Length: 153
Image 1 (cartoon, rainbow, N blue to C red):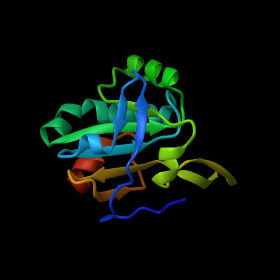
Image 2 (cartoon, rainbow, N blue to C red; image 1 turned 135 degrees about the vertical axis):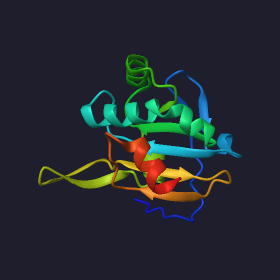
Image 3 (cartoon, rainbow, N blue to C red; image 1 turned 90 degrees about the horizontal axis):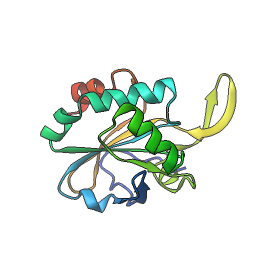
Image 4 (spheres, rainbow, N blue to C red; image 1 turned 90 degrees about the vertical axis):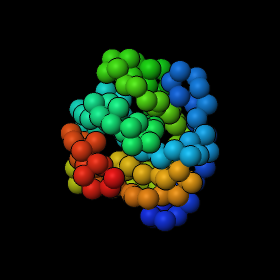
């Protein structure tokens, strides 16, 4: 598992969003990106996080940001999730965990006292040149947008 830090070049990625569009890091060149990794569609914490970002989406756009979510769920699951909660940003299906692995967002974690492998909820703020500005590893799912704006933007 890679441990990415602020100031490092963000790993290039390519994935497909739930609507079939190809998404790459290089496609965001010239814009800032909030790239967030979450465990599972339509679960309480993940829904709260996505809705927090959705509710402040226009504010992110005005600041020159795009938002992309990544989880190991399928494109079909992402489509239902995005439609149900009217998410205006793409979600990438990463069932092979290639993007998750490249960003160190897949690995061993402690869950209810047991060691398990899974998604390590993490958000990366990537600048317009593809360099990591901030890594948020302690995500406040209910107020994630406010957390980003208050501490990192």
